[in-house]
Image (tube, rainbow, N blue to C red; front, side):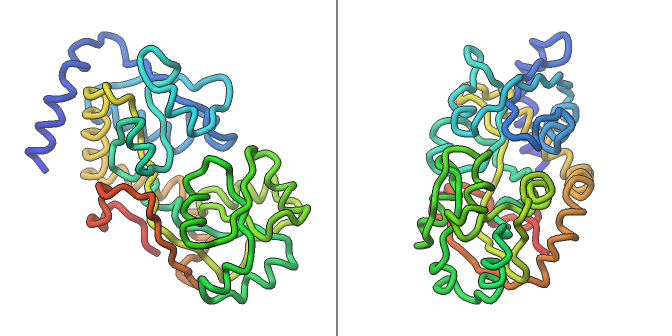
Length: 281
């Protein structure tokens, strides 16, 4: 680890030497929850760069940017410098990932939003075969839609996050799988008439990374170096618990029936062999 630390510090050195004032980094508003510079990914990003001796000023975009479009807008001549999103083979072809899962895999732990009558039926599901009899709502370009389809689930896609909850209330799909990190916030704000399905949880391996432009090697090295240092000092886990502890306590994952799904979109370089990087209840 010490050798890796030195290599990353050397790779980040040109960027450190070139800066005078704090580094200016343009980041996206990827959702209503993440619109604030005080969101978990933004706070972690700033602290990681500070730990790499490269303090930064974060500048969120004024408008929301869909995840796929945000990846396409990375680079000095575009709108963004850093994006965080779920990885896939295709996304790692488009941009450079920093392969430390910042949510420790939480986006692969999925609870279901549904109307009460559907929730009662779904709560009795025990196998993937039984789950295939229900339709799942997902975003049109979300990697999760491909994960569910690869497991032969019936997926109804929508181009707009804002209308999905209305579609669910209208019965256009039976359930809306949401990550543990998202579901309680969305239930409070958009979930009128909906409930979280009791007893059931879906799980598949999924990593949300920071991504930078392919040519941004110094920035990538600084981010990896800072994240590794935060992990070594315990700050990473402290921030994770501070931002997600309440959601995890409310989800009570250890008491739920878990249906495991495969994720064929997951790149082979994903560090699944490092259990310290992943959350387990």
